[in-house]
Image (cartoon, rainbow, N blue to C red; front, side, top):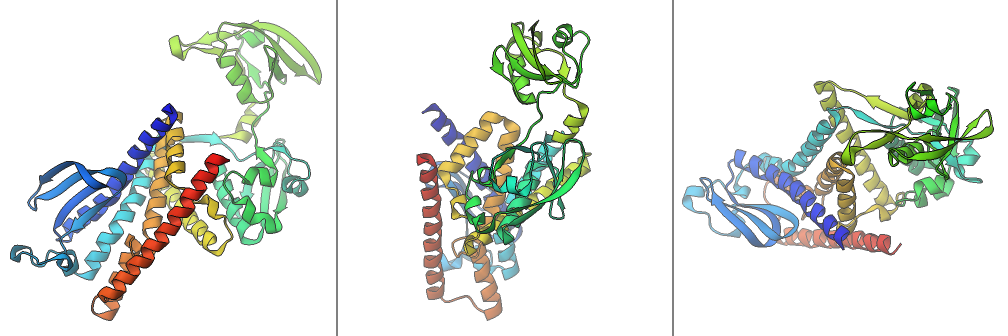
Length: 451
């Protein structure tokens, strides 16, 4: 229950921030365009807090249902306009200004994503390179010749330094024709090309959580091979040498470097048995794990480091100047936006599973999980959702910003507003489309919960 409440709290925080930024875009550009703002609301329903201010006595409020928000402009279609406000109604302003106001909401969501990524990139960026782990027998990956330790250098003609770049490229190529051409680099530096051919299985592999199992491999990580030891470390004192592969600690099996780090960090000051292989011969020693830090920050250490070649093969670290980090943030926002649009188009054509549509339950779970992992993960989550919100609102559905822009363009071409009947029909179609979208989203959420 505690986790559910935490997820709900972080979901409300995330949605409130994203909606506030989106609606502020409409609000501020509307004011610049000379429109009178009657209300700025975060949430729907009955206001739980309200304040009036500004020369127009605008109502600023937080409402009881935190699932959206709105900016209400003066509009002559809703009633008579006071003489002093004549010309300041939304529908009385020039059409280009109206379109600018409607575009401003999604634009501010994209600007928020850029700002969040910029904040994340300023300290630098580090993570795992796209390497292949265990390959399942008789899988697409095995038939393509993928092997443990291969690093995906490129997908088609696109260089892939990170897992996100690799996954985006793999999905795009896979849904295009069922074939993914990889440029691979082995741990020893050898380079070759391999083609994964999934054929008609592409659609199923786009379902959430299916890709790796469906292709037949897991993300790779370096084995627990010692590259060097510190002279005063517990490992060197126990006779561990460069090239030894750690296989167990305290009777628990160790295979990967991350497992070794986790086992050591959790045992500061403990005396444990350490199993290792040297030239294929199993050995065991006893050592006392050293420590670093104090209190809750105290961590175990034995004085071993990963071989530099493996570090370069499996991990990347990038540093940026202030300008470079901004450029990287813009590029990441753009590539994520393009990918989102392409995947939405593929869902319409049936090439990508509609199970990828997430509703509020799944988004709340992601919000809680990202917040638990730390601030940087939560900010990254906000950036992704902000991009999705921007793209969604640009869809040509009448109840969304994109649909309203279509109305304005139609009025510009026609020379007069659409008839009331046409607008009502469009609103009904838009509401029906949103209800269908929400139904898919809730169904997918419940389906994930039920497994």
